[in-house]
Image 1 (cartoon, rainbow, N blue to C red):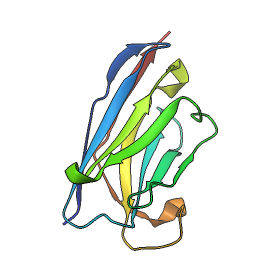
Image 2: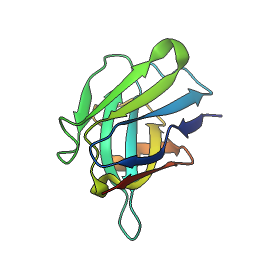
Image 3: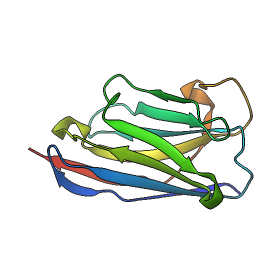
Length: 125
């Protein structure tokens, strides 16, 4: 059973930084995509960033490119999201996710099958 557990959210002032973690367990994650999504109150869930666990290839949403960095520690089966220069519009619940099967990278959003419970990030102005 794949489990994803996020941590690291909190309250930060605009311009500050946070690092989110997602501890993964339940299978070998090599060659799977792992990703961060977020959902703000009253808004649709949106893609933030994704990484191929083995190759390290990445893709970012335009809204976070240059400010956020996605990475993995394969020895710890952990996914990270380093968030710098945070803005109030980054306020959301952040979720990590992974696909159920191998496939082309980056995968379509509908292919993310396993999800964490989310961690709240609040950026004050």
